[in-house]
Length: 300
Length: 313
Image (cartoon, rainbow over the protein chains, first blue to last red):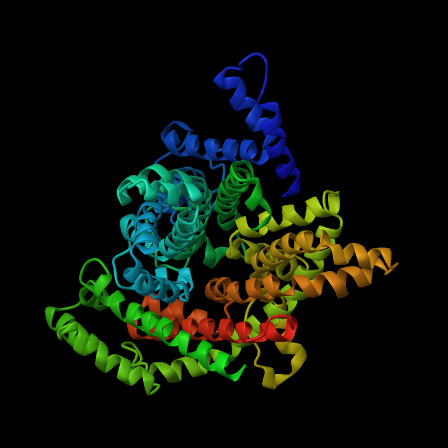
């Protein structure tokens, strides 16, 4: 987005202020220059707080079944109504934030770490590169959702297995990104100079390569987080994800599916929360991308 | 050119081999005991052993892979555990609805997304551009089943313009077929439009800064012919590339869209197979979709020469 690109270049010129601003003021100025980071980050923070403080947010036990109060419409007592088993949808949606956020963050972290290792290996060990890249091309030819579905068909539904399945599907993207960065950095004069000075490979990786992979990896991690949350919801929605009793947004929508023509709100409340959370992460990713590297701002 | 085509086809062989190896190895990668999971909770130990034998998990990994690959290469994707029908036959029965949905989505998405990206780039910075890009961010963020339910609720349930669910084969007439597919295609196209529009805009922004565009403008050419003849032609390669890569999104999205709109296609087959833990069917569908994906991208690679005569092989 061009508007933000201009902002990013503006930030460089404005950095020379006579009075050294405090950390907080610098942070606030950064947020003002990158509104999508502020909006996305703020929205995400709200979702995290909702997840963390779920028991305090006027919720009841999200798994408590009560056949006498089935499929109630939203009311003062049941803010979002009740589902087919009489469970309070508001409580389930609030607790559902925990599942989505845990899955999103864990997948982003795990796939970044594993992808980084594979990418570095591929970028530095020449004989391994060919094999790894063919394997990655192969894995990337399988649509991520299908790959996760196939894995979930072979394991019991649990949060841990869902995380493993989505992580496996996302690793190739990180590995390929890191390999690209490594290959382009290896041609840089300062890396060649370090090699000529006799620096060993581990030192080159830690001093010169790793710091340069951090910015693109952070951006990639936010997109993976968003995509993981969507895949988790899809897996749960089609019945291949987290066990139905666990309140997750995908599960609530799966339960509302049979009734959606008469009780559309059962599907819509978790849908709104899921969309807002994914939107928050995507906005954060876009903003980080534009502010960390204005040159790649236009490439996606 | 012919040499390139042959070379390019040969490079897809190791990729396909890795896809096959990976899809096959999932049985071994999966945590826990796949045979026990597939058999279900009520299964007796004898049932589990029977399924273990039918999946070949009781034999050596490489021997089993060799046998499996040999049969796949002959077009035999195995037998469904649940229905005992050949997987290829099950796939064959379900291919028409999915193919219809995807082709329609592809046409619809390209017709909307490319002009949207071009206009957003031309009007860069204005509210039109901001609106288009806000739509693109939304498209990436709103999951496909949410779009599906919203559209179905509005246009089928409330306004009653289109059918809520179902599929009519093309053999029963073009209009009934199209009517049933409009909402699913719009649903599935949502994220795809976002992706294509974003890339089109980014590429067009770059192209519009080139010297030959300034030349065209100073020659007095009209805006429309500059945009769609000079600029879009030069932006075509990245746009076509992303259309090919985005097919993966379409395939994943089709599984969900078909569930929402009760379309009896391959996605529905996959979902049913998951609920019954019918692994050979899932394996077959994943393998087939991946093969199609690789093939489409191969064709797109070969098509570059058509859109950009500078590319010669």
